[in-house]
Every structure is written in C-alpha cells, then in structure tokens.
Length: 80
Image 1 (cartoon, rainbow, N blue to C red):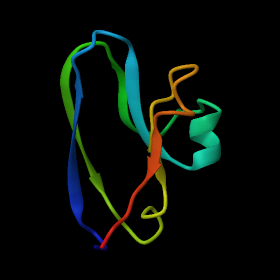
Image 2: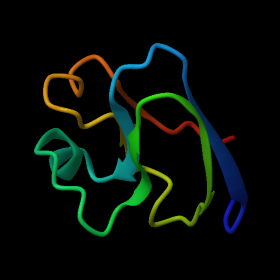
Image 3: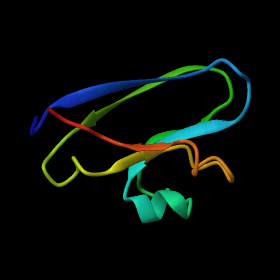
Image 4: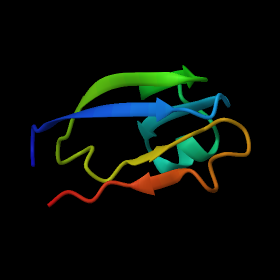
C-alpha cells in the first residue's frame, strides 16, 4: 500500500470537543501535535483530510489528543 492516499472523514455528532491526529504514539499520548496531520478541533459535523501512506508512516497511530481522551481513543493502522 506504499504511496496509497486515504481520505479520512471525521464525524462528530455528540457536540463534544474532539480532534484526530496521525503520528508517533509517544507524541500523541503527550498531546504534542505540532506538525502532525489531522483535524485540530471538531465539535460538530464532518471534516475530511487526505493522508498518503508510505513504509515509514504505515506504523503510526491515530488518536484524539483532547486531555483525557487518548487512553480510550487511539489505534494503529492495519494495512493489507
């Protein structure tokens, strides 16, 4: 899947603040999002962005980094 571009559609219907970033797990856990790709703030509605996967980025995580959200709102890509 090298060089494949994925479109992420981030939907928030609850009206609570969330975000969505892709990056190294340690940076996401520490809410160090400067320079990371994603959606900075989404309190309601749908936001989109595109992300190109490379061998170097395929093992990155995605997460919501709003304080207190990371432990329950993170994951790792599985590319087949």
